[in-house]
Image (cartoon, rainbow, N blue to C red):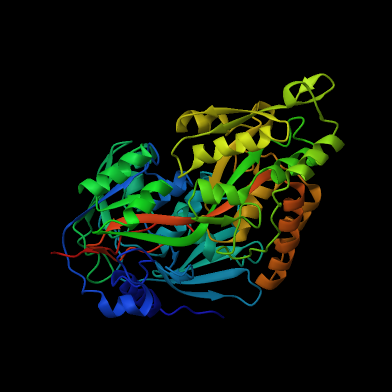
Length: 542
């Protein structure tokens, strides 16, 4: 039996509010030094955040997008959460009991919690939310092996499983499993959830204009005593990556996210600002369409990996704010991670592999086979994440150096997502510049939504259309593992096999960066979500 004490969450929140988890940066202290010097929290004020375009709706149950998760956590809450150190902690569920066979998980819920519409949060609400998620086939509904959900009493719910699920809590911490008010949903209907919300979070939605602004007001009836501190949080949607930094410097924002590496370096030297830097689960990679010749040849895919200078990207584009990725889609911040390796930057090895695959150097230095040039399109966005376009430009040159004609196609986000979210028979792309956040903080998320054949886009995120019967069998076997140790041994084997099969060009694990005014405290990294929540933040009055 495992029991979580409700006091733990309160302690973590107080530490975050006092600035303990605020991360390193110029002008700020970390750890015990910061605790000793941090001023006491002050209530009131408005926090303005310069943010990226995230979605045309705020229905987080219906999507699983990191940028939407980042705003949804202000007004919706989940049964579990992750703290500033990445550990799973209670949130709406305060205690957990697992049966000896692992097939029943009983959750004791927090007392005194109400949704924004005034309706009590209870076991009936949890049952309704989980059953709705499954019935509507919303994201990740089929990943959890839920057989049934039952109310034990008003504040106790039992989740019955078809198999043991060591990662159940991790998935229930993913913001796509946020708890909605059943009464509110039934009153306004599903379509209204795109613009309105009734959760249990510290803020309520006052105004949402897609691609413009999200305005949140303090929840006066929030169940955690004395929280939140702020009266208002405003997300200003600013598509231009440089304009976000300009807003911060001009005093039009208190916090700016997803900034370019040059702007981060500049802000480090400026008085009145702090830069927060911490490793999360954010990985940059290039998806390879493994169904499309010549990319169906593993020798070609491995050649692409050896052709790319990861250290060069880190130094030139990201200015040191990343490390080489050591496993496909996953890193050491994620439960169940195992190191697979790094494809060494070795252009000569890349050329040899292409020679072995029958691609010989032809006119103009471009390789040919059976009269066809080795020409690949690399699709990218510009400013969706820091350094995406600049990295793509470097990679284009690196591929040209081994005899590949790589053509860049720069797309705006809506067109980009539409183009790369199709079933394999409709996918016409070669290479796609992508990045990923492991929302649940657990490797099972990667196994089920990136590695498995059943995860082909558009259902999930296997946009490489990677398919290995052996990997599928191992993943299915891992689902029957009773212990986490048994599961993780299989995961190590799976991760290594996927690495060897090279369905992506494995690039870098990027540090998460945020810039804030030095009057802002209590911001911490939610590592799994790769964001910097300010829901327990406060502003110093000077």
